[in-house]
Image: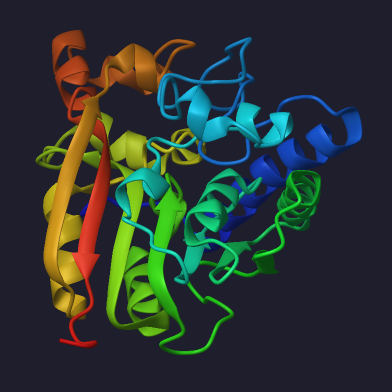
Length: 296
């Protein structure tokens, strides 16, 4: 991420306002709203009447969603299903970074069973309220939601077996801090298995469109402008000490996926074919890594 980005305080304020507002609207109006990446109105990714955007279609089958509160199911707006690939086991302790309305935390709680525990961390009171409501409606007792920033997780060292997240790390201003916090809270032998948007090969250098994209708060909130490249993700994990780091791409995206209401004005800074080729580098992926140690 060599291009300049907006100040961290601006990013945090914009993202907190956007997602906190959506959660509050759902609680107040009892209507579907975005609980994770992107949204359903023109202030974010895609105005889709079903409440599901192009990143999020067909991520969870009906059997997986069986027994999940309707509001949590309709808020499935991440970019993958991390609980399906994290190989969760009964009795494990799981941390969901940026837990939003709680869907993935509830699914993880089901997988780890009553002997396990799931913690969700989110920075907005409105999202936390929505998540607690969904957990109560589902009758799930082995899940807790904590207020906090994923760059400064409010949990002790070496306390969880698995860290999951769903299309949230791309929203963080300092992703190295997020990786460092995941490492800190994981037990030796723990696993990092997160879904996120990545840029295959990164953004081209000396690209006016790419530079403008990195400055666009709308595109940050839409899970686009803040994405890491696959190479950057692997480098950060390896530098932190993780082993076995890999990025498994699930689906590529197009310009219409990322900007369904139309490309931003700054897309005219470069030829249309260049802009489309840049946006086609974006993909939904699952990022895996292991913290060495544990029982051998």
